[in-house]
Length: 329
Image (cartoon, rainbow, N blue to C red; front, side, top):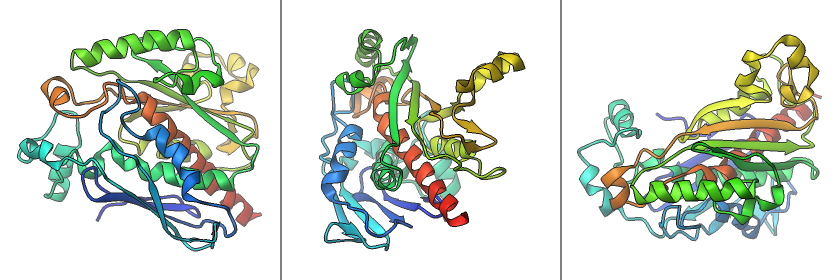
């Protein structure tokens, strides 16, 4: 039996495989009376879907959501909200050669050993396509957060190239979702070179939360930083997590650390201060390289498509802890 749910009060349960009939999510704990339509879900799903540029997977998916439960006359009912996204461009036949062998760096090996049954069609549940459901949940979560809370993710680095400036208005104007236009051009050239060679690269995504709700997060095991780390590291492509000064704090003197509150990342004692929250995730290179990359439909750099997923998981954590905080108060 596998765990496919996340959250305490606001809880998502996701289902579906990369090359199955559909993917979806059931979101429980949604307060009644929130306005919600399929049109609300489209912009974020469009940011995550493939075939956005020549450096993303060419798989053609419209990712049109169907709300099948929990909404009546445009408002949530307080019952579980269920959303379905059908696969339109699945090609299970492309993976027939992988039925009896595993791909290096993928979950194929461990899934087969754990369950003795493996969906070889593009990784099944371990595919990045699973994140469709998370993005849907994130849209709903944002409706629970205060209207002034803003969650913005961007590609802080890709390969050896790192953003030096931050201009939020430019993030959606380049295929890498980098907030530094100059570095975005260097990143693009780097990824294109790797794509042509059948190789791939990773990077770092930073998520900034402006005006987050204060006092969310529990002081011991339910710390905000722990819940965010759990959320981020549950994404297949994520290999590391940090907040505030992160690993840089290890090289600081105590006097240096406390001199700049941005080092705290908006979290003290596991509880949000109300100041901006800054978290980062390390994204691994795609494990599909060489002949596998040339035969299949893979991203040479998954970083830009992870950005909306990390934003969604941030929203889910904050909304869940906000509802818990209200319940405790």
